[in-house]
Length: 174
Image (cartoon, rainbow, N blue to C red; front, side, top):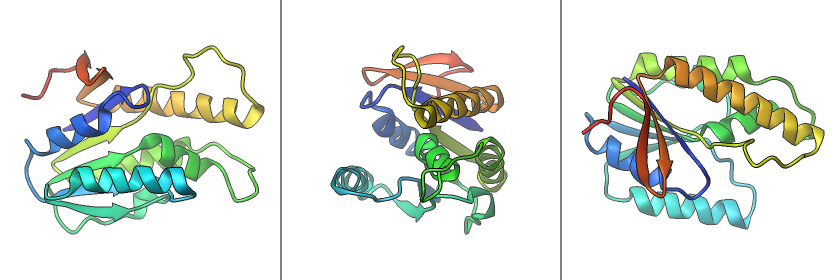
């Protein structure tokens, strides 16, 4: 089963994703896609590690090439998050970019084949109406296409609003 969680920044997606994982079979894998790149990201990574502490997650840091990742056993995987994975796959060191769609989707497909349950976290972007630079607009467009494809493939899609899951597809996992 694959569940896609979406919502705005800071809406409780991570907390909810972890609570879902606690209801699903072990082993539990946390696939971390955020590449540490400064104080803010380091704080966020530390906060997420603290949130997972004592919950039985094996953390796997994977910033790109998700399709070549081999998990040591079946169980439940939490991929956090598609936004970071997309940016990592899309932009190179010089800021040049190319379409990450196939790499991200094939990576999620590979994870689905390796675990009983996969929880995928992403962000809702592009609905603010703001005009951004060319690279940011390309990223928002790519992420929107990836999110739409993942939603199509997912068994369930929940939008988190103020920490409350709103079912957009499928049924709420109890």
